[in-house]
Image 1 (cartoon, rainbow, N blue to C red):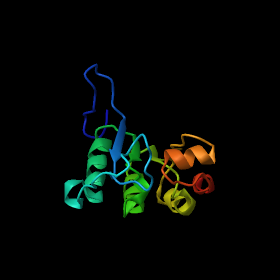
Image 2: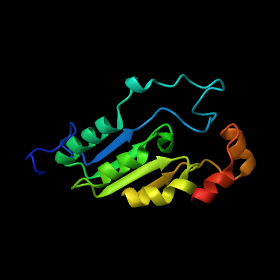
Image 3: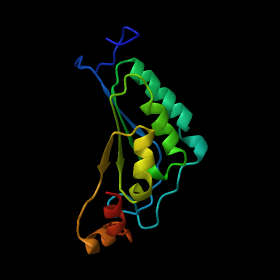
Image 4: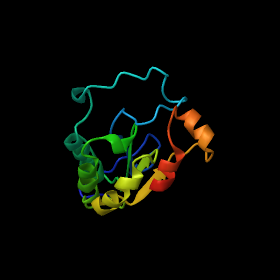
Length: 150
């Protein structure tokens, strides 16, 4: 049980302790399996949750027993204010595991600040360790930049 005396369960009465929040539809790569060559029209800011709304949803879920939160995207590190969101969720009593799934392109500059803000886990989506394949798959991405972040 949690502080409200209720908990989230699925239709088989299993406890739900994990929340995944997609923080943006935007990305700094153009992977062939994820995006058409011409790209996609980005959602307007008023069409997606604000960071404050995401934190409020996470807070409500934590009060219902969620202990693990993962931030995803698109590419979550391109979202303006992502450090504030990490800080907000990381400070919530009851959050044992706060993670992010990223393509790694911005990790080189953001890993330290993310850890300081409360991030505990990073999952880097990496399809190949061959520079030529990475460049082709991502339509121009540089594997070396991801390696620097890792």
